[in-house]
Amino acid sequence: MADNSIPKGVMSSALARGHLLIVAGVLILSVSAGFVGGWLGAKSQQNQTGNVDTSEARQLVLNESQAISNIAKEVGQSVVSVNIISETTTTDFFGFDRSVRQASAGTGFIVSESGIILTNRHVIPDRASQVSVTLSDGTELEDVEVLGRTNSSDPLDIAFLKIKDAKGKQLKPVQLGQSEQMEVGSRVIAIGNALGQFQNTVTTGVLSGYGRNLEASDESGTETLQNLFQTDAAINQGNSGGPLVDINGQVIGVNTAIAGGGAENIGFAIPIDDVKGLIANVLETGKVQRPYLGVRYVQLTDDYAYEYNLSVNRGAYIVPTRPGQPSVLPDSPAAKAGLKEKDIIIKVAGKAIDERRSLVSLIGRHSVGEEVVLTVVRDNNEQEIRVKLEAAPQL
Image 1 (cartoon, helix red, strand yellow):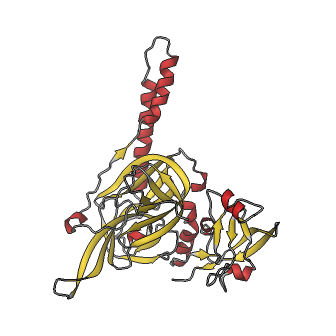
Image 2 (cartoon, rainbow, N blue to C red; image 1 turned 135 degrees about the vertical axis):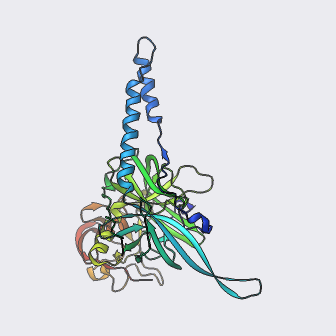
Image 3 (cartoon, rainbow, N blue to C red; image 1 turned 90 degrees about the horizontal axis):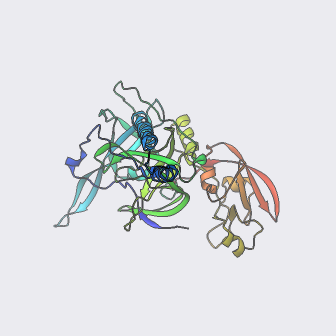
């Protein structure tokens, strides 16, 4: 179910040809000093003379600013601008079809020394005819291959590129963190190609929420996204596909969308743990193969548990069969493992399905060909079922 309807944060919007110029070295650093206010207030009350000693507060701001600056420099080496030329067909005034070239831009980041780049699916449109990347030092690399994208119906909005000729440049991959360990209020940093023009723009904020499900749209259509982080770190046009980084300089998310309708500072990112299985598969095989289970389910809440009269209120409930919509897809990994309608999957490889972790996100942490253990409640009895994951069929 969708929580909201918003425009994607960096959908590859058409840019004027002159706007393709990348201004290297521009950093926009938004550091909120709001966290100091509470400290100053407490310090003021404690000070008998009524004078506020701001030296310690000032040092806190300087230390955090320096930490963010260091992270921007370190992680920024792994962030690339993704430049796309797309071919579209339009009908002119006289009724003749003519080809039109459009330029757009997004962001990606390097995940291997061999030149594998992770970005968003919507950054690389189906009609893309030419893709190049620009490194943090301004070097443009034109020999770039699109390895693949997740299916348009997949809630994981991810694509992979491969730099085939790095022109002798040493490519520095990012360090991946553990998004599952992030808490609301944790400091985060977003790095991206703002507005498709300003390379390695840096903004900061906090993790505002998790487990967000929503519908995102642009001129190419609408897609459903699941299990997203919410952040108030500014995510602008062109930031999609860029890294969301923790205070240790490790990537914990992939910037993906922003809220429209007059909302301010509401951005969304894919938790990196949900992408790790796909990254591992791409590094091993060079192909984008998304593992899948093959069931139709609802994510249980208290309301759904009451509606279906279930004994548990968290998990993935395999909904009863509807005409033309089997609960367990034929010949799927779930069918081969013996899953049935009305089963409730409560754990994947020992990790519970809850507000922070959906069935899709937990399955996505594993690789194609891997065997995982599902904890299932069937007829009020808990049991374990082993399933071997397969590549999701191309739609």
